[in-house]
Amino acid sequence: MIREIIFACVLSFGGFGVVSLGDLLKKDPFLSSVLVLPIGVSIYTFGSVLTYAVGINRSDIGLYLMVAIALLGLCKATNEQKVGLSDFRVFLYSVCLITVLMLLVRFLVAPMLTFDSYQIVVIGQAFGSSIFTFDSRGLASFPFMITNFQAGGEIFGLDYVAYLPVITGLLAIIGATKVISGQISSSKRQESLCLFVTLIVMSVFGATTYMLRSQLGYLNSHMLMAGYYSLGFALCLDIGRRRKSGIPQSLCALIIGSVAFIRLEGLLLMSLLIIALMSFRAYSKKEILHIGIFALLIPGLWYLRLAIAGASGNTIISPRNTVVMLLIAASPFVINIWPVSRRISKWMPSLVVVGLAGILSLYLLAQEKAVESCLVFLSNTIATGHWGAFWWTFGPIVILLTILGPRVRSEGVWLAVLGGGLLLILLLGAIRTDPYRTGWGDSGNRMLIHLAPLAVMYTLVKVQACFTRDDRVSQDLVKEDNYE
Image (tube, rainbow, N blue to C red; front, side):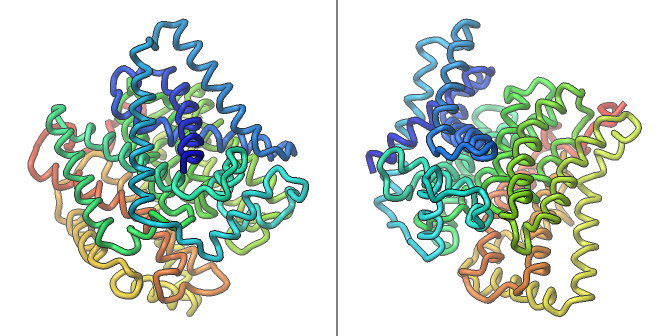
């Protein structure tokens, strides 16, 4: 346990070095202390991706790159007087928070090592060893980030990394809730109240819902995806609404790009986040370049390398599907380059939802397997998937608030990320060789965890809008003059 905490502290140092480069460290110390671990994990993952993509089979190179980037960031921030000795308290707060959470999770649960979990451990420990080859189908069969955790764990003498992934996902969810609470609040007191109430609601449902509670001890990547998907969307909202956001665009792009490495469906979910970000306003070519490097280029290198090596030979992420998904992810950047096509950007979230709904409808008409998969998915949501009252509560609430509730800023973007994510999960079940199956262990049922935090946050935003007419929560997706 102590070695795993040390591993977490090293990753947090990597995130702290990057956060020190911007204004976030001084503007919001609490948010900075929460985000340093998820950011450090992202940098470590990106470093490992580049290492393996160029054929260097060493699991420690990514960690060295992360530490080097952190040290360079701290040196630059110190020279520019952005960071003083007192600012290192943020790093200490983060270390204390991570230690307490890891001890708490260890006390509450024990790792539930399923067959998949053992396979992930084996694949992770093979990274950098003599038996590692890039054309191994294990690289495409298991999520890269969670496997990379296991590879990094070997450096610290860990048999397997049990608690660090879930703590990273939890902190990302807290960070996302903090960012969104700040966007809809008119004072620090109101922001703290929104954050507190939302986290209490999540904790209550997490403690009483098996599917949420099980993520504390299950060696998979669903908690990570839930955290990064929520955090990526929250940062998109913050940057899209404010031209002078305290969060750098490159940091937002780093989190968005990380979604592509968490699970096989991550590349599709990452595309939804890119579409959301690009729909807010017109970006300069320099901004598009900064965002595209992390959110498209590096993930693209990894997936293309998998496709070329023939390591992505399953149904969902075959070489053909990989190229198609990368083109979809690249389309918002291309549209945003030319002034004539920029006006389409603000409609892309709505077009995506309509398009996904249309494709799913065609599958339902053409394939009986798609109908069976959707019916099983619905059954798992309301009865057989061990979700308890969660979707009985937030399913109807989200639908009613969408139809009858007040219009909020970025309403279409919210629906694209929530509704589009749901449609993607249903589509994945339709194109699989076998349809979804009844029970908690079905992959479609487990992927619903990715959307659970956003369902709670969307409810928070809508309820807040019911009690205020503040412009922070007022309607109007995006100002028209941003596209001039």
